[in-house]
Length: 292
Image 1: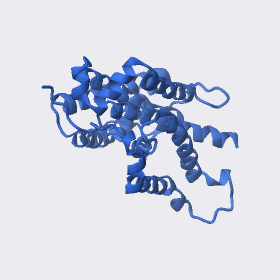
Image 2: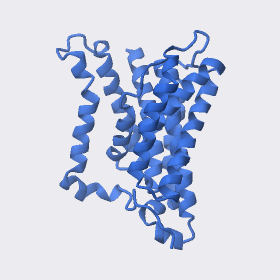
Image 3: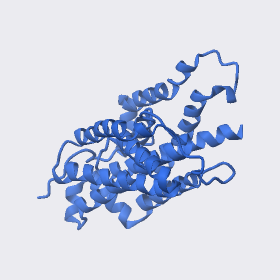
Image 4: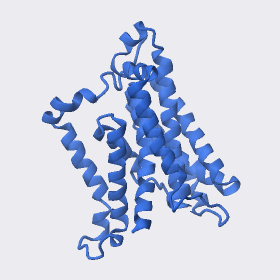
């Protein structure tokens, strides 16, 4: 049972890192639907780096490449005021093509000498991911910086009048969000899989994006949702570790995380739900800011 719990927590770690970075983006008013692409770039760069330099440099390079593409998204969506959905989709499509060309030649497991550090089977990155969620919750809820971030996502014009550097805040959040997405991808390839295969994210980035909405843009709810989806994802892959007599075929079970995601998004999109809870959504999310 413990190995199953460990694997579930590793999936939760991937979702936590990617989703908390996107939550930070969105609280500042920037939407990045290219999380899957950031994860792919982080996974590929981290894996290739780890083959030659080790796991820790792999994590660092994955984070840096994620931050670089977060900066690119910020430049397009904030400075050039390109449609944020188009910019994010462009990153995702580029990542799919680029890692297929660049990383698929390295398909296979990590070299035997390259191993991740573990504490009772758990990677320290899991504890780091939980710490990041708590830190971002504290910053958003309890600090002056958090107030600035929230104000840029709600009303950037009023924030600018109050002395907030809206563009600087949005750049900062988008770069940090990109770095966390890259780290999520590096963790996927280096620790959870320990191997490279064609497009290994398998939709985890889209689930992370849905988790942000499911959490109502609140980090602590996001933490619970990631733990839940980590369990569901791992159960869909290896249900026999819980109960060997499940009648559903494995391909159907592997659809389970996406079915649950669709159901939750339908519920969140309902008129009754929006009337009661939609105030949690940043008012200026996805709206380009034109400084007057």
